[in-house]
Length: 196
Image (cartoon, rainbow, N blue to C red):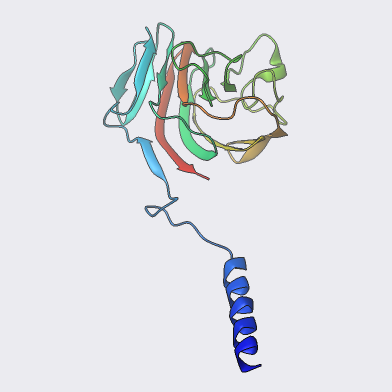
């Protein structure tokens, strides 16, 4: 009887401890990793002919077309970054890219940066052909923030503190991340990621 009571209390205690929430601390397991710190493009593959260069803690391009691509694939993650673009810029953050050499909105999720997109349905803050942005936010001529979460089919985008996308989509499950240059002037800085 005494042994059964001790065993029961032990199981209850294990269940209680297992049910407690866990917290992630930056710099520890599950914490944030800096992908671009402003001083080097180490850890990025260049695809295309965009003229990426380092300047004042940013990576920027003004001509050509192309991507900076992580060599590592990601499945469930949260990525945060800052970007600065001119009004005529065409850029984006591509996630879960299926082919890191031939990146497109067809084989990845394109979180768009394109204020003057001819079809405004999937303008800045939306995911091209997947989710229209819930708010129209112009980003030209100032620093902006993206907070992008992909967890299973759940995709969320927050632009400058406003949730623009909250959708479920069963498409691409895992792949590298790519920063795009298409037109105008585009700058990125403070790119960080954590796996979920």
